[in-house]
Image (tube, rainbow, N blue to C red; front, side, top):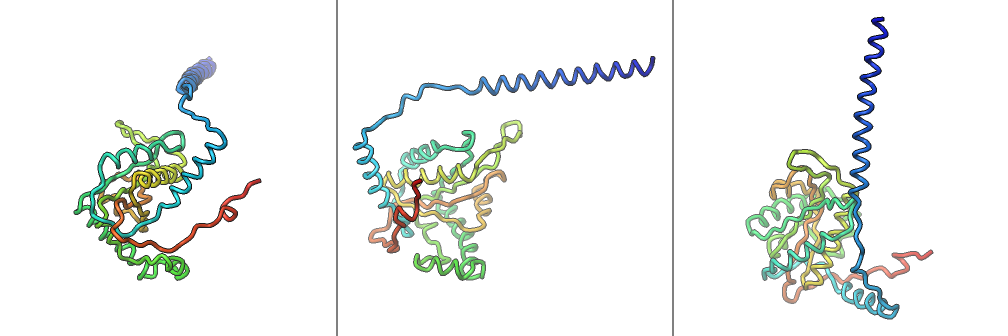
Length: 255
């Protein structure tokens, strides 16, 4: 009788637990399904084939004029322009629309000086300290780069781009982000294009490692610095390396 009582009690307990979790699962599925809300897409514009060709060619002619610049004037960049370009970057497609990026705009001379000092330590190790293999240094030779990065101070604006592996809400709960590198890479490309469209020059700087940016800019541990984007107006009579881009048949395949 005692054994039967314990078995019955155990089954009732298991039934309660099972019912509880089934209810939570059904509720979660219902919330997930109801969270998918769709609206009519009314902003699409269809062009004729001739208009498509014209627009594609015009944009190509425009964007191929973009060049990486290493010498900048100290002319300040309008804040509103930067804000709009960052909003443009924020429209980038990304994993689960979690938007795993954070942009820190730096214009303070003191902070730029600190960034340059730390970046040049890493660059010295790369160019002079044996960190980079000779093959890599040979590949960079035609660009004329070295361990000195004065543009980190002379350019009016730096944008430190961080990738967030997860987010933390006000309760301290973590939410995992997905396709983080891909998402931030796309957003960065759109930011560079938006800045070029606004009449500004850029340079993508990637000292390795870049953890010093978290310390200087006081960013949390869930954010990983990916790119330090230099932004400004090119210095008068600036020069750029004489390079070419690969032709279409080397970068694309049609099947």
